[in-house]
Amino acid sequence: MKQLLLPILSISLAACSSHKEQAAVSAPQSQPAVIGAKPLPAPTVNAVAMARIYKTDGDYADRVPVTLDSRHRRLVSYPAPSDLAGAAPVRLSDGFLLDRRGVSGNTAFTRWTYREYAAMESAPSPAEIMEAIIPGARVTEIYQMPFPAGTPDAAARCDSLIAAGLPDCRLVFSLPQRDRGS
Image (tube, rainbow, N blue to C red; front, top):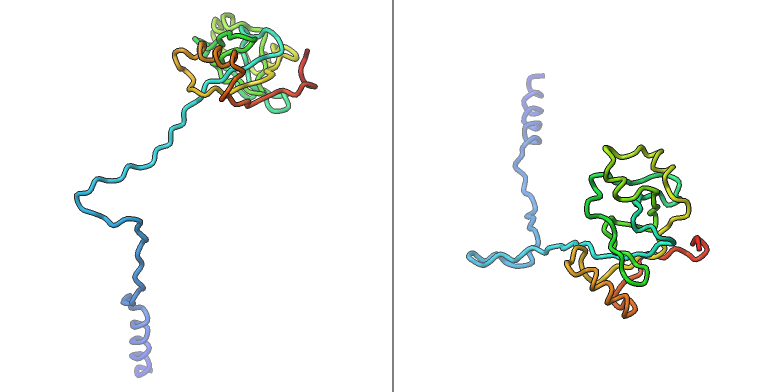
């Protein structure tokens, strides 16, 4: 038995050896490394919100907008009263409004004015907000402008583009005619 133990132990130890030749693995390099060379700049992503203008099916410019789900049955998003400082839309020509709240095709308008809502100590409950939605008050069209939101002369630039027929502007939402109140 002792005669078998030594060869078995030797074979076991040899099998556990970590000395194995491995294939050389090299990562592909797009450029050779050069000592002292300037590093290449990393690509950057510039995500800038573009200005948007919109129309509604009534005069809701001073009414607080909220966001509903796609079926307009459930509240998805609403502002805190403190969110409304400087957020009222700017009236433009041809019934357009310069968006400063982030309206979408799922926006609904409440009976509260910006001033009334901003004066509240806290936001109303979701149920209270749903009860305050003006029936049929909808955004009918939204255009993305060819310049960033917050541009100092945004209103004047929007009015110029509206007068010219909205060249270089992209229609991002249009409520189907059958769904419009008027």
